[in-house]
Length: 83
Image 1 (cartoon, rainbow, N blue to C red):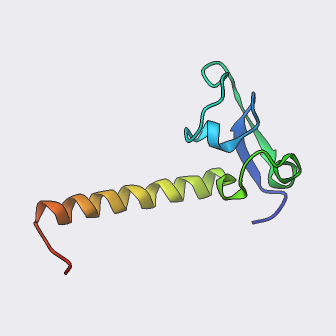
Image 2: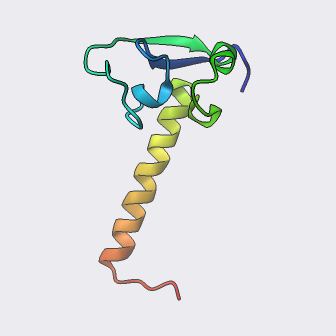
């Protein structure tokens, strides 16, 4: 991670959490998106840096979460106990 990484954010509130659907701003329905440098987001300090993921990092995170849900669903359907 470096300050020059481009992060996709809501154009209205300049927050990644809004674009990612975590916490919406009032203008989320009509706002566009834009990309900002991680360093510029740090200067604004509008949200915690853990939300500043590049598009590639975000795709990997979502892929991992899907796999985890699929595995959990499979384990539950098999009535497997880990105790």
